Image (cartoon, rainbow, N blue to C red):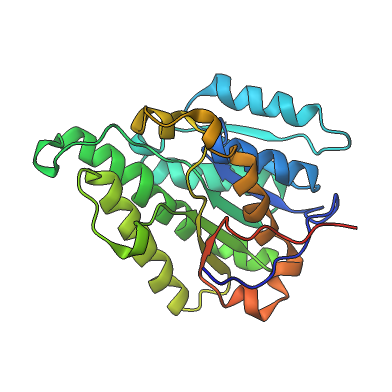
Length: 259
């Protein structure tokens, strides 16, 4: 994928910005939250497992001069519209603004034929991977617009070369829907930047569960992808027309090295 060059992420690149990261307890979400905190952001850690969120918060507390993160437990698969409204209202009410959302949370069960996906699994996976990103973004949109250079990143898992994938079930359907959601919403020019980001294969629990035969040491740590993702959140990226105009991104091209 040919990409516009991204700016380097300096220690103050995200200073003064409030960034909501879903799935912040592990994997790409945790790595992105740490990257954003190092760059000066006030990070809101959202996820369903309190212990994991607290572990991420403790890791941020060890970063010199990092803003204290906020922890917001939520099960996206079971959340209602009221829950989403309460989350955004609480974040903006307590922190004063919301500049960006990174939808890094992902829910997956296993690979199986579409016919064998249970209604319960279907509903939960679609809710967590597609409905929740739409709902949180829809509710947060006025705040993102008011904050200036609002940015929303939907974490993707596209098929290679656009080919159909067997056995991805509701997860594959949700991710395909997410790409359509982002592209159609961007066409409406909502007044904020929207990006789909493909982190590629990473050394995460979910990846190793799905592909147990993969040697973990052959996969990059999530922080490698988080480096590119977090650079997309910078105001410098928002000031670059080439970056703003590109909807689909991957971790293949990291930002420039700082000097």
